[in-house]
Image (tube, rainbow, N blue to C red; front, side):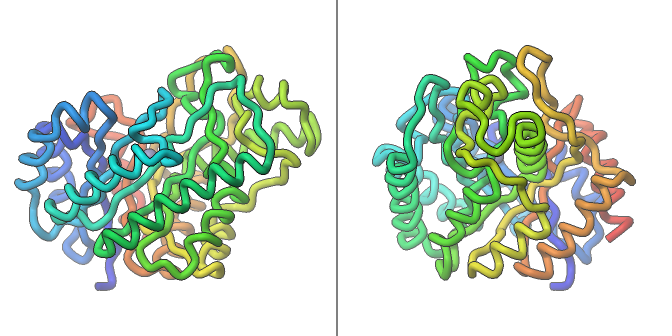
Length: 336
Ligand SMILES: [Zn+2]
């Protein structure tokens, strides 16, 4: 198939949202491209409580849709059930993979969910051993569920900047924020056919802007209090400028790893400042510098990795009409 695969995100428990995105996809995406849905499930209120509804909703979807499951997610709280460093999370993820197999879902996006509070500072040795536990869990899952692509998603810095303005309340994750951390995982994923990445453009650009700002104002080795103040405690020092996304994709390819999913959002290069209001996780994609960068990334990622799910993941003011996502989809389809 020559076309691209375009997905819209929908809350898996909401039939209204699912029906709305099917209608939009059928209207907007020509038959030369493939359509799909990125199904979202938050832990535990949605994914656990509404699992029967979620199952029913998924069974009604068109059979030729590319489905990704983006669940379970719990960035707000430290929770062993989803924290990929734990054995409990391995059990949770096994049940999610079994569910995916039973529902014809080909891709699962995984968050490390290994959030810590701001008080903890740990050395490189400890970070390495914690990462090893994540890798062990992921490789067990990839072997047991070989028909499913598992994508580890990169995270923003600061984490939860769309919900929290006080750095003291802000969780952070030691993993998957910078290009170096992503590539560190890519080395461990090398050669495993169904283990790869979900690249969230907004998350990446937000982390990149923060790192650039910190280096410019505090140097490559800022004090831990500076990192904490800017919600970047999980980022290791020394800091180095993050490569652009096209270079990251090339590097992932050259390490024999893969990108399975790409979450598309517009972005600006603003920096997060403490107590300065909430961030919006991305914006419409249109004919700006960011829009052109995103188009070139879509083409490159598609050329490098073959079939990739591209989801229009920008926030909307109304999740039924989805004006922002429709505008962005039209821009991309017209320019591709
Ligand atoms: Zn995500």
